[in-house]
Amino acid sequence: DQQVKQNSPSLSVQEGRISILNCDYTNSMFDYFLWYKKYPAEGPTFLISISSIKDKNEDGRFTVFLNKSAKHLSLHIVPSQPGDSAVYFCAASANSNSGYALNFGKGTSLLVTP
Amino acid sequence: DGGITQSPKYLFRKEGQNVTLSCEQNLNHDAMYWYRQDPGQGLRLIYYSQIVNDFQKGDIAEGYSVSREKKESFPLTVTSAQKNPTAFYLCASSTVLWDIQYFGAGTRLSVL
Image 1 (cartoon, chains in turn blue, red):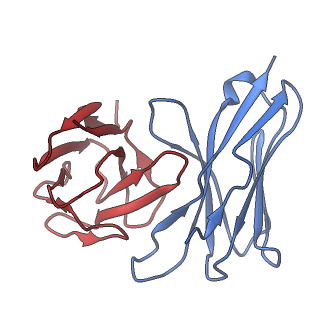
Image 2 (cartoon, chains in turn cyan, purple):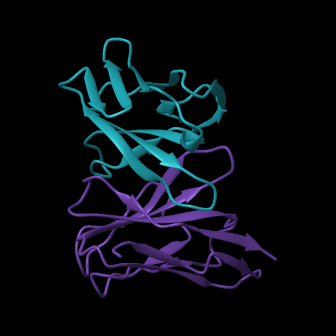
């Protein structure tokens, strides 16, 4: 049962524009959320995170927004650059039988075109 | 350069064979993890280790085994009991358990 859903498998954005990647979750016990970025043939790299006590976290061009009532978070990249082209995974965690294990979405492939 | 090294990059398994995937980290992290990724799917947790000589089953541990004899190393054995082993395997580590995880480049396992 997929508890973290990224419903858009792919997204194409023009360079300089905003990229918005969305993530929905079903488990109301999730209290920590992360975004990872993955290039082909490499492991995911941590990008940005947010705790459930906040609704926004910003790091340079990357901002994550959390809407707890809607069980929705989004990653904004402004301005988008061709080097941002990668697969982005949303992940969430909560205390469970497996500890605070991460639950990953299926990923969204972002293509930033010049 | 600190990081996580997984080897081999590609691995093939014959029917009934056990194979071992290597994961080494020089980040001085206490916690290590193994994940499996299938095409079009998210990562699923196989095993994790909080500290040397300790490890726990994740969500899909059946058909896999691990050991943690050294802080730097967390090898994963895919046993013949794992009937569908073809997947991309990722190893990760973190300073302490459940802290932000850093991933290796992965091993792609296929069945001959």
